[in-house]
Image (cartoon, helix red, strand yellow):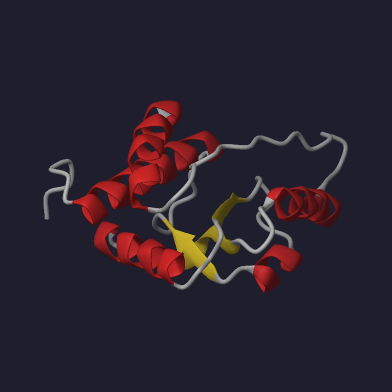
Amino acid sequence: LACDYQDRAAAIARNIGFSGPDILEFETPAKLKGAKRRAREGAMLYGAAPPGSVLIRLDERGRNYSSEALAEMLARQRDDGAGAAAFLIGGADGHDQSITDRAALSLCFGVATWPHMLVRVMLMEQLYRAMTILTGHPYHRS
């Protein structure tokens, strides 16, 4: 399902000055725990973000954006010259402090704890929805 929304978003994105979205996966060694695991994941996430991208971390303590507000934020980032936006989904132990410090924004999908793969689907759907809002496509109904 995430790939379906990813493909839909990508088809629209090119027409309005966006690229992607891309989904990157990382494996963290199971033997790492706690702070060491967060540090390794943080380094991998940061290292994979395109240079000059706006870092947006997904975290239950982040800000709730309506679909319209997310679309506006993405358009503003694009119009301000951001080369890319990197949405960072942390692992089971959360984000490393280095990611928290570097992130321009923190986004949440509510205060509940969500499985990583479900967050991915929710994010891809919201990115697709944002693209449809920005283009006036009928998918989103206010």
